[in-house]
Length: 360
Image (cartoon, rainbow, N blue to C red; front, side):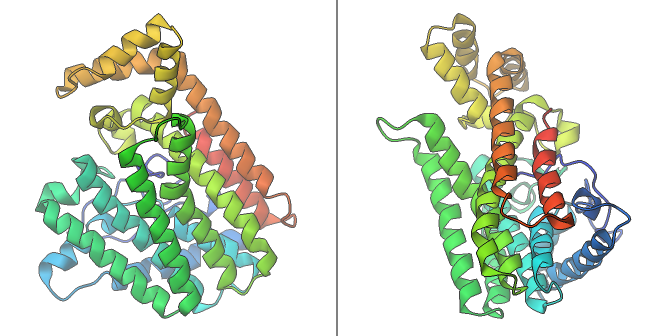
């Protein structure tokens, strides 16, 4: 499955790479995405994000050449650092200077990166963030083991934070895996495919975003009553983010997304636009039925894939998926109502809006 961050706008090149590193497709998210660019909050977020980048680099370092190179592969290829930024932003409700906040921000990014190594193997994806995927460079075994290695390094970080951090990581990891398994098995008999898919997204994407908010609050010693609020927000904004990414996979050009357009279609992943299309076809929509037939044909050639992708883009099912993504973004914003007014809340609202602005 796609990631939730490939086409976010307003990126600043805050990453650091040497001449030998792969050229990043984009840097981490600019703090201006969450705060006024000239504000003290934006400056504080920028400074802490640089600390997290250093921590990530040291956390994945290995003495042996192959694991060191493969572990740094996606880290150096770019990425928006969405989850670390949300940890740092949530921590503003407490004392954001705690070392555990930086450790938590690095840990959630390592967990995310680990899932990318595994996802690309399962999807047989040739590209990630505009660079060859790890399994395309070293093969499936190295890619899978590197993902495992990053999970281990994330665990070492959370172990330094105490048993509650280890528990939160384990619970989140369980949901990530169950979400992948449930996507693989599909909905059971009598289960609404759309409801099943939304739960998959909540597990595979929303759970780690929700955990990011909780990590930031818990380890900055922010008021505990804020945790359910940011968890609810994180679940909903994660679903909106992934729904937007579904649309990007279908409707965007590869140069913008850093991935081959239509990857999910070729792999037969039933994302929301396809589920809506199938429902329309079952209800008697002849145009939808003809597009479904294209999607169910042999898409092994680029020409066949492009025909199917173009047909789906032209069908109203794609716009309905956009509307659904917006509704989840709106729900995430509404979940923030209990938070006190201020720059941090404004940043969370703006982030939820930016999720769906990608597919406007």
